Length: 66
Image (cartoon, one colour):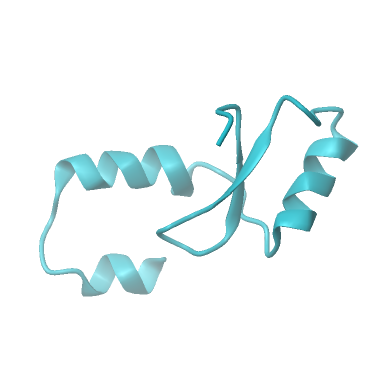
């Protein structure tokens, strides 16, 4: 993620807001199974859903059904 931010051509405010909302403010997991296990351990199965991040390639949790 840090490499991607340093190597991009310009600053795009809307993209920066999307990165903050989608990635940097969330925990990243190495696999979908790890993300689901974390949600289950916290009693959030069925409430939190997983998605693969386009910015850091980790898995994150969201309340939006994807």
